[in-house]
Image (cartoon, rainbow, N blue to C red; front, side):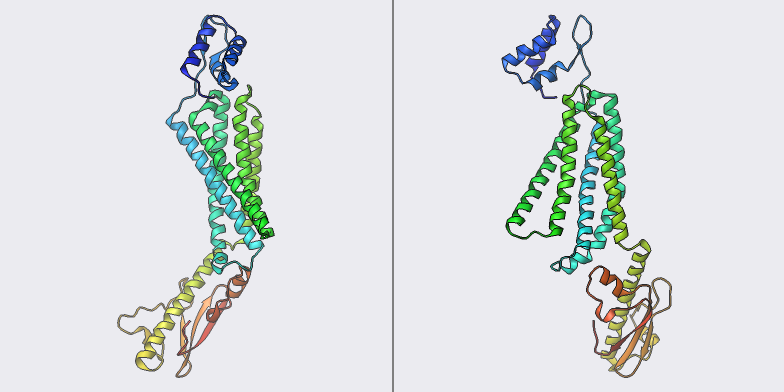
Length: 357
């Protein structure tokens, strides 16, 4: 409801008390230059009941509970929209690789997908629950549609969505004029436009329902929520299918820890050789040095690391690995592991006394 001046409210009250009907009051105010929205807002504040005096309708007021619910609702909306876009971007980058992508960008994809899925699994149910709860509350008490905090946050959301759409289209035109369009870029622009456009359209329709006496098309909100839920489930399913399973990720982290331990052993062997001008005879001698604490045991409780001296300048470091380093790196287009590439199972790395990765 548009804000009205005290003079306008007092005039409407006095006119209704003197028995003038609403249409007469409306025409008089229109002739005086008041806007139709201002007039409607003030007239709607009085109930159309048969009584000697004008009967005021309940007016929207701000409560701490209502402010809390709407703040959580719109916060989860922003959090959800950001992470849905992030997940779709990561899936596009994985499905449509660009040779110009830096290695750090490729390496972060699996972590980005995992975080986005985690955020969506939590944020969307919270948002959907609050959206339905508040919609039912407004349906039972239509005056709450005029809640100040609801209107302020709705207009703020419209502003953010409109800004994103303008920036998105500007970026599209800029790249189009520069001849730098690619399929992946166009799809990313479409993702941003779809998310921001859906948010903008939904909340703009929600505001326009206030102009309809019966509250407008209440079912459209449920339809948007269901469609968003389906899109979210599909995006999460695609992300889960793309990334490694939780067990695989644990095995990868354990293999990375094993490589780190072997690199520590390699450094200790190099230090021994620098001090003694020879390779250590065995692991026990290497670990017996004062102040030295070497990793000798497998982090998952498997077979201990093994060291074998081959000759005066060559040795082997062995460990049991859970994964094949080449398969995952090829899948995610990561650089190969170099001297530390390994298959699944037991593997030994042959080193010379001068090697240092």
